[in-house]
Image (tube, rainbow, N blue to C red; front, side, top):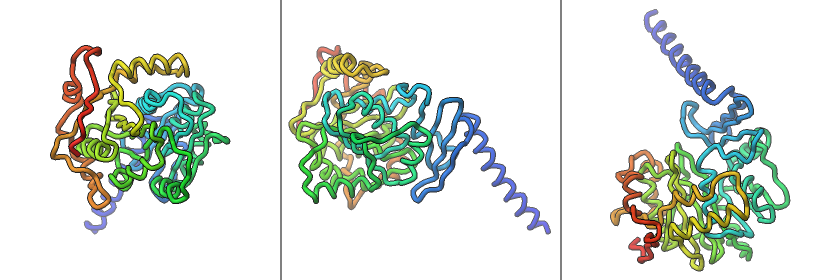
Length: 337
């Protein structure tokens, strides 16, 4: 009898804990309006007034995938969706863009809004995500914005196999989240495939997290493939954008990034401040020589992600230098990786 009582108490505690977590999340993000167990993840959609929030994985998790005010679509409520526009500082008039990872569709939707003649391909592995993006986040496709249900690496390989001549001016890698990162989209071999579908004067942008040891491994891997890697750090989040230009695309100094931001602000007139994005730029971040490149044979990404990074953003800022902007130049020394 005592064992039965203990079991019942244990089960009740589990139910209470789950209910409490759900209530706490609902109190913060609003009412849970949609939950879906897809083949790849648990998907949660919350709504509070006109603001809709998308989250994946464990319900108490802090990281948001997307957040949209459906009454004001031009507003970027999450910092990383603004920083993702940093690729435009290198390639201000892209003809074709590839985005791996859809989420709520904010990045491709807004790029389509500001660059309506650009052809945008979005690749999303989970067929449930586009449905949710359309229903809750005001995402819509047309003849210049298309979603492909596929694994991102397989999509790229298929283009290589078919010898598609149209290359991408900007490739945005956004298929990651704070709980799980698909290792096969981080490796040297994968980036070499990305390089094959990238225009020579194009640029690759990857949304990553800089507060863990995986960040330095990703920097080292980008350097191994592209020879150059620059970073835009989030100012109030742990997001960062790794940027690697193609062989005929120039790297930027801080002064050049700010100049390009001013031009883009006047040309495209985004609802957010591109100059503020350019000020989050660090042109010469380098991983330690001991950091190993991620490969298909060795990519412990989810273990590295859980380990705190030795270097902090403040140290990165010191590495980039506190000199006057006029004196800041790009570190063009060959990569040792």
